[in-house]
Amino acid sequence: MNNTFFCVIHFLVFFILSFTSVEAQQCQPSGTINGINPPNDQCNTANGAKCCQEGQSYNIYTCSPPFSGATNAILTLNSFEDNGDGGAPSECDGKYHSNQTPVVALSTGWFNNMSRCNKNIIIYGNRVSVKAMVIDECDSTMGCDKDHAYQPPCDDNIVDASEAVWTALGVPTSDWGSMQISWSDDA
Image (cartoon, rainbow, N blue to C red):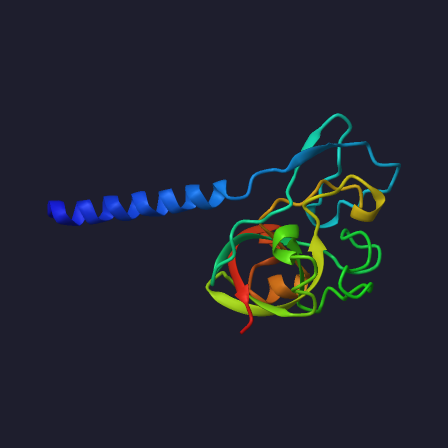
């Protein structure tokens, strides 16, 4: 290999790392909340959900990373059904939704004051894509209370998805929980 090839590779790696660093810096925590221990049997840990802990401090965000054509995110698993780990009914329509329906909740900044409610997004992961409807907010500003199933606030880069989304992406159930993806608005 010649030096030109290595210079090009070095530049690309530097550019990608620089862009990722700048993007990460554009959404900083806007504060913290203190965790409380949930009342007995009030935190649903289905789908790997975590419960708030007394004395633990949790970051809150009013923003999400900048949105572009294909925005990087973390796909998480959520049940939007009654008594599921999602907590209260969906923010967009006040209803619960079947795990067999491809629906998602977006972090607060991307949810953008309900502007994406009942609109479809395209999720790219595992070398395939799936269309899902935004029905809820993955609240990055609040948590550790009954409305949020006594779970911590969401991170700023979450697409919280039903089982149907994970199935459509062809992810084996043993790998469900958290996965790097990208997403875009459905044109």
